[in-house]
Amino acid sequence: MYVAVKGGGRAISAAHAWLDETRRGDPALPELSVAQIEQQMGLAVDRVMAEGSCHDRFLAALAIKQAKGDLIEAAFLLRAYRTTLVRFGASEPVETSAMRLRRRISATYKDLPGGQVLGPTFDYTHRLLDFALAAEGETRAAAPEAPAPVGAVPRVTEMLAREGLMQREATDDAEPGDLTRQPLAFPAARPVRLQNLARGDEGFLLALGYSTQRGYGNAHPFVGEIRVGHVSVEFTPPELGFPIDIGDIAVTECQMVNQFKGSRTEPAQFTRGYGLVFGHGERRAMAMALVDRSLRAEELGEDATAPAQDPEFVLYHSDNIEATGFVEHLKLPHYVDFQSELENLRTIRRSAVAAEGARAGIAEAAE
Amino acid sequence: MTQHTPHPTSDPLGERRAWMAVLARAGADEIAALLPTLPPHERLRAPETGLVMVRGRAGGDGAPFNLGEMTVTRCAVRLGDAVGHAYVAGRDKRQAELAALVDAALQDPARHDALMAAVIAPLSAAQQAARAAEARRAAATRVEFFTMATMR
Image (cartoon, rainbow over the protein chains, first blue to last red):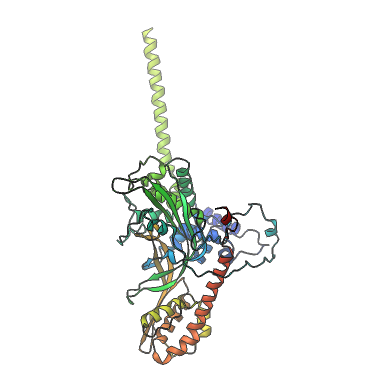
């Protein structure tokens, strides 16, 4: 319970003025522009778009600047901003098989149609601090180019499915549940779970995914495929009645391949865990795919014993904006609550002392 | 390379979809720089920024799910008898209005061919060149397993 507390107004405005000053830092240094953040802190922008659940690079960069680089605060700002905008409708499902690829790798096949394309990756870097970056104004050589092949880049999951070794996805085109419109309810269907995970906290998803690898959930995953690139978004405006291409968004997709021992109705085969996120967010897409698969335990008739297999535990705690709201609300004045706790504690103490005194009195009388 | 500029006069809807796709990816300044002077247009719907919920599919090819929203700006204008529409990613209201205006103008047979050549063709060529450059960079990072082939 909170009480109205007056008298903090002057302190609050002074605190916010100081916040603005600390955001700016040393005025002798040039101020960061939103465009610089958008271009040079690109992966932070991607994370804020994913967790803010709103694809707009400029807004995400502005939020990062305003939040002084606190990415959860930035995602919160973006989520708050989106509530001020009208919803025109929902897009056609994006076609990730037609993604214009910057990166595409598979850990299950060495030689596969379309090949292993590394793209702009941290993989195989030595993780040594590069002091050359501290010397500003340095120009680096342009990335090399090579003739681009024109062949198709089929999905690894499709290659396995054609052999009958990969479970096909259900292709029901029902209207998916939407967490921005209806609160989470259980049992949560897979589309709702995927929406929840796509905007979930990266650290939480990473830890849960890791737990499934370490034995809490018995997962034996392989990265069937990771794709990073751009997809076109198609939307059907009601006044036009046909789908139009409204532009590109950056996405990362991960297809995690997991074994499934089969059931009475289905033979032993591979099953999928799926990750799809805004921007270049490979760790996030992989963690999402691991958790998506572990949440399918019940559907696939597996024992659900681990935290990552518990839909309520996972889905109720994945959202860092809800989580930070509830954790940080503890900072707000709880003076009345605390007074009652204090009163309670004192009463317990008093009655304990009184009971002790009474017991002592009885013992004395008995002697 | 010709993926987004087909001229299938037998498929006017396909052609309109293609030019709308080009305009959705063109900056306001880029369109304005190429656009010839047009008579005044009437705003049927002033440029407005909102959201489109982007959907994906479970497993890439399964049931649809809501991935997250994106900002989109829309506008509708009338030019003569034609009504032009635009829905473009992002929050650039000037781009949306110019895209709607070009969409209207392109529906006028008297203006169509000249505008396709003056506006859509160069924008489309620039967009394809940028995509091709990115594809060449990706191709340079493609792994060639030359040693493994002899070990199989």
